[in-house]
Length: 208
Image (cartoon, rainbow, N blue to C red; front, top):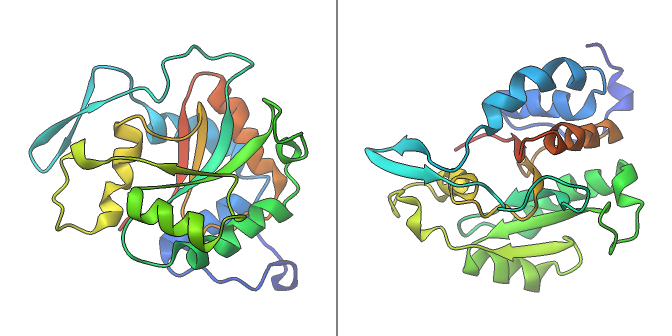
């Protein structure tokens, strides 16, 4: 992939993984080649599937009990866990989604076809975002991840996997993005077509 440096926004990914997600998010040519291979690896999991973490067995739940259909909700979301300033950290990533002119965001906000941008965090983080940047996200979701089984002393970012495992992602069809993922092409929303075919969540993030 060859791009003119003058065509890119003045945002530089912070790591090798970030550079990879940066390229994926910006390129309309890479998505069709990778979706069929990566999505099953990124999402899998149904009721009764078991995951392992530090010797603990973790039941993987479906995100929603409803069947796939035209009334399902879709959206992109970010997870914030810990004491950092998530309003500031997610500002450019959220702004890039809004600037990409996604067709699903041109719909009426009350429409079933509108794709929201959400923040997901535990009580402390969600309250801080509601107070610190009330207009940045369409939705702020408070979740309880205490049942995940991850050591409370561990890096809180490791608990991101609990959002999927415990079935508390905010929408029926979810695109989970890290806070340094910059979206510069509207074709990212074609992922929703894959999700509606039977998957529940895709992700581009680095941890931890």
